[in-house]
Amino acid sequence: MADEIDRKILRALRYSPRASFRLIGEVAGVSEQTAARRCQALRREGVMRVVGLVNPEAQGLARWVTRIRCRPDRVASLADALTRRPDIAYLALASGGSEIICLIHSPVDAARDDILLRQLPKAASVLDVSIDLLIHPFGTAGVSEWGGYGGHLTPEQIALLIADRPPAPTGPHDPPTAEDAPLLAALAEDGRTTHTRLAELTGWSTARVARRLTALESSGALSYDVDLLAERLGHHLNATLWLRVAPAHLHRVGEELADHDEVAFAGAMSGDHNIMVVVTCRDTEDFYRYLTTRVAAVPGIDAYSVSIRVRRLKQAASLIAHGRLIPPSPA
Image 1 (cartoon, rainbow, N blue to C red):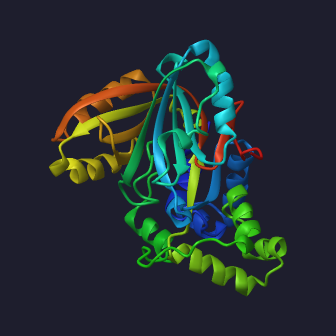
Image 2 (tube, rainbow, N blue to C red):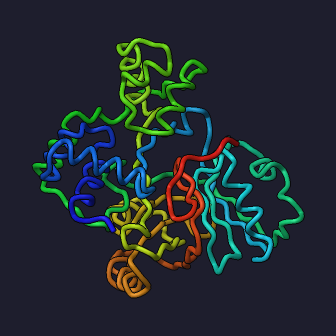
């Protein structure tokens, strides 16, 4: 189980995924060598992965929230096949194992049937499929993410970590090119890969690597995320809330929910329920407390339903296997 130092390191990475070990050690109260050793252990044990992610919008793609209901005895093979698809960014089993919830990257003008390769395998015994467009993610990257694991830092420590953070993207995306493929593949494997190592993998100079990263990051085409395995941090209950909110309150409600430590993701979507919220809690009582105190205190929510996750198979750029975060297998 991660201790307080580990949790402070994870919190530091949340604010600055590519921060130096010296800076991480400074805010966690340990030496640079200890910070490096702890980070490497967390990654090696499959508790944490820092990953570089290409913004789907930079590739002309939208994000689709998909719910697939099928027979529980047939769900495993379909879920396994979907996790290996590069266009699937998140996948979990819910509702007693009879429902697959996933996030698919596909063009916004794609026909509904094309989003899942025209037709799901008949052997999967699919009972129902709903596909809704994710319209807008709430919160701020690196801030409005799941933070229920503790390790809180002081405002002064946070200021140190975000001092070199690039400004929020303002211009059009700088779309990745074929030449960027080795660079992006290395960052998808390890978002903390050094400029020197990236230069070796691409055959570029370190100066060219730095320039290209700056261009991709400043345009919003490339960002970094910290995948965490919540179960290894003592949080065993994960749920998706499907909320119905009047349009006049949509932004306020979404932003307020995104700031909750229990929330891993909140976004506006199309469909009968127009806000999706992914929640991580310690156990059922902790989840009940969250629903009846924090969610209940947010005005403007007209209705809700809950899908309890049974098993998570994929998140961001990681697969979950044998209780560990691992890189995705080739498609």
